[in-house]
Length: 290
Length: 260
Image (cartoon, rainbow over all chains, first blue to last red; front, side):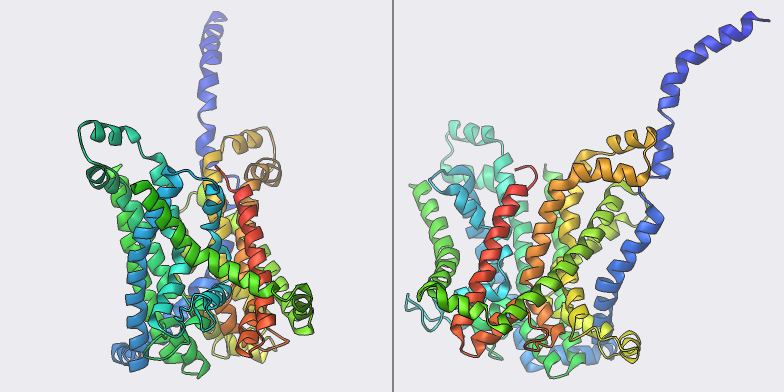
């Protein structure tokens, strides 16, 4: 009688250690060290009041007259011209960024020269510089008083230059880390098997960089179609010539044509949304390749 | 050969797109010495614009820091339905044009029913005054603090927090003694980015502020207004001041950036 409890108790003591250690995690998972309910409610409320409800109001206001009214507002000659210019210029800017961004990332990773770390820091300047200042500095070099005698102000080229300035970091900063991580053994193997630098780049390096290049281009594109501040001073905002979509919307707000402003804004939001979904697909495709 | 060509291409591109324009503005600002710059920046309008900018930025940064820390903890440690959706929605402001941000806030908090009209009847003016500008600034800089903290929280793991919890620490104590020290550099990085964005916001603030000189004019709006009124000295001086803030931000961010 007395021996039975002790023999039962002893294995109990031995196993209780590991057994008791494992139950807590599920309890923590059910009750994490954050007030999830209250915190989640606050976060969602904050996000809703500042971002979601206002954006919803834009889409509602832009489409409440039905598809016909929406379409009429978007295809008003000046709005349509501004949307077309915005999308085309942004496509061009994304394409230039893919090439130049990759070249800059390449030079920053594979090359070495004095002052490289300064150049590396400078790349982020367009993100930190207020857009109106970006427009002003570009106007100083490419405006009427240009010391290069290159007056681009009020031309469509100035739209592209402004957008190139503000989107400079995107491709560089998406390609750079991939290039740093890239295994150089593959390249060495290709060289030793007689591949030329061109073939090695095309067959070995480029396929590895492509997902990063595309997502950088996508980010540059969404930033470009949304851009306002840098184009204000430099492009002159001439309707049918240099007026981008954001400036067109601004003009409609100022002239109290809120419904059309909301319709053009909705069109812009839809384009951005489609590109973001494509970006997500590209990222998943990139992950699958890894 | 290729190496030299690529290096030249990269550096020339950066020279003509970035270095020369920014350098030229600095040179034009200081070409007649410091005193005209100082005079332009100490005019009552400029000082007022600086004060407005600072108060809008501070409110926005405080709000986004509180929201950012809380939301980052939720996204990393919390378990709830719709977590991926919340994560995606946080990034939404980055894809929205500043002008659309302004329009969106006008539609809800302007003179329109139901919200804006109600606010107006109760004597609260949001649009064309500071609260609207703070809202616009919060909107555009919303993801920055969250995105700076999330990777660090993920890397840190919950082990230490759980250990503190088992040893009897309360939630607040765990947060203050374990979580905050773990994320402080990332938090500082996020706050710096958020502050820079808040000080430099132009488009969204231009829409909701009504650009009332001497009332709701921020430093970026001051640059535009002075330039369009042919007061280049003041425009360039304020632009250079803003560019200086941007450069300081860059250096701070480089110093604070995690995993660098």
